Amino acid sequence: MFKSFEPNKIFVVTSKAPKYVLLLFIVVLTIGLTEALVISPEDYKQSHVVRIMYVHVPAAWISLGIFSSLALLSVGSFVFKNKNFSLIAKSLAPSGFVFNIIALVTGSIWGKPTWGTWWAWDARITSMLILALFYGMYLLAWRIYENQEQVIRITSLIAILGAVNIPIIKFSVDWWNTLHQPASINILTTNVAIHSSMLIPLGLMTASFALFSLLIFLMKYNTELIKVKNKGLDRL
Amino acid sequence: MINEIISMNGYGVYVWSAFSFTLISFTSLYFVTKLQLSKEQKRFASKFGSLDVDKTKAARLQNINREILSNTSNI
Image 1 (cartoon, rainbow over the protein chains, first blue to last red):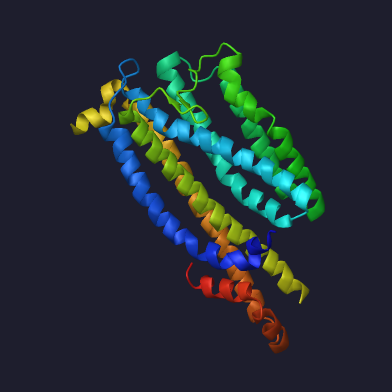
Image 2 (cartoon, one colour):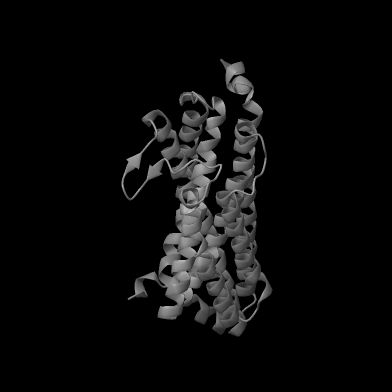
């Protein structure tokens, strides 16, 4: 079933793709930044500070998306006993962690002029911080444990346990009284409470962030495959 | 116009620091990842070069090995 996704076969694609993805990322990011910083209007309540949304929201979305993928890949690696799943998950994690940190830091910067504080132990912020801790544990486990079977088991467990936090982050604004505003965009119901003049830069910045995480994933995945091949050469 | 974009009604310091932090994080992650990739490619090339003729022949049979070697010059 997964034969066409074998590392030997897909390396031909993954080794050539990064330069094209990098080029596309630079183009989309340039257009996105122009839209976000210059063309999009200021908010009637928050004024220009609303522009932080164009980095904060995509970073939060992508860090959540990547952690969900880690959990799914971990389940896949348990069910199908395919080590390539854990290799893909390991390659996705660094960009997910960086996006999580970006979401926390930019959220903190946004909090100061709007809420009057850099940090609050609010349900959404706290659950995002917990996600960062899970990302940290996941990445640390890959560094600490050397036995491959053991590290795959431990990292999969961390990813699956951490996935419990994903719906908590998503619904924290509905379940508790928080400083955070409720979701303005709902993919399931296609409900959008944002004007197109703000939705376009948000979409462009999300696309550029997704391209960046794809770029880092491809580079990291190639690194991991070469590491495996290096071990293979040692055995020759 | 330029002054307005920079100051953003007094919120410029917040907006620009959020965007700067994001772009610095991107650049750092990109270069760290590129450095790790380049290190592994170099290690592979040097290990491959130290193999004897028979082992080199056996290793060259794998497409992925040829691909790694061909990409080592591109980094």
